[in-house]
Image 1 (cartoon, rainbow, N blue to C red):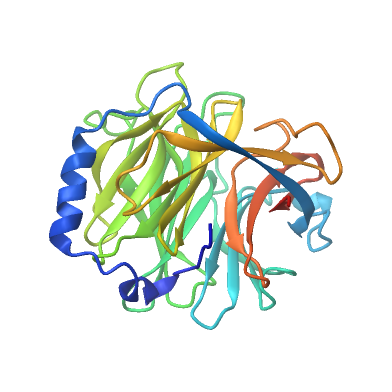
Image 2 (cartoon, rainbow, N blue to C red):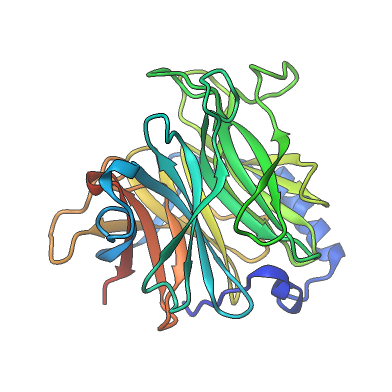
Amino acid sequence: MAMMWREGTHFRRWLPIAAALLLACSANAEEALPVESGGTITATERWELRGFAVGQAAGNHTRAEGQMMMPDVLTLSDGSMRMYYGQRSPLPTGENILVAASTDGGQTWAPRGVALAGASTDNERTRIIGGPSVIVLPDGRYRMFSRCSVWVGNGRPDYHIRSAISDDGWTFTDEGIRIDNKTWDPASPWLTVGHGRFYALADGSWAAILSVESVKAQPSDLALFTSLDSLHWTYVRTLYKGFHDPVVVYTDDGYLMVASYLTERAARMHSADGLSWPAEITALELFEMGSSTPLANERETGDFGVMRGADGELRILSNFPHNRSIAVFERAP
């Protein structure tokens, strides 16, 4: 499948779907049942480790700086790239969202420091911070969404979604809560609202696909939210049961999503409008170069990002906990 990036405000020149058609798609989406049992696998793809973007293995962070994870890549109108990613480290460094820049199509990355700092005391709701997703607003500013929690030690994080704003995309200022959980808002249906992606729709409105938990001790699901202003979000429906940690990117014929199903596999799905998503999935297996045994999903890889390289080909970015880095995978021939 040939795919093309559409970042920033360029989506307005892409997919000239009328607003009425989008409303019709939304109505159909609301009536659809969530996909269960991991979906219907129609193909399997092999992806191979080709290198590292940031972290100890990439040589642009030290082991002492902690684990680099949960990448989100933004391609700007001039072709340059920014990667937003989480830093997990003991205090006093703590958890932060970092930013790195690339001017060669993602072949090399130069860390540019902290984009958004987590709190330094355990009872603050941004003590655990990560899973960044950054959009470019029509006025040129940047809005970052992240999943955050108080510190829970070895317990279950109490995730909710916040936003932060920036004029330049390098440093962000917290704006507050966007989607809360039941612990802090009894009216919320969600025990936790976690890692996901925010993206623009063809009519200029916004959508988000987030990992949500509505039942205690059950796997998370992927839920679709929409917004007219990127500040106020409305739940639309649950898309997939048992999936989590999605990334969504624009393609020349719609939207591509990569997510994890339980601990079994990574998968990708395609949507024409970003609202209606199918039961059919492509299973993804990630390997080290030349290996015949795939890496274990979520233990050796996970929390995916997607970018298009200088050669025009898609890359999958992934946590690589073994060396506290973010790995880059290419689709095998």
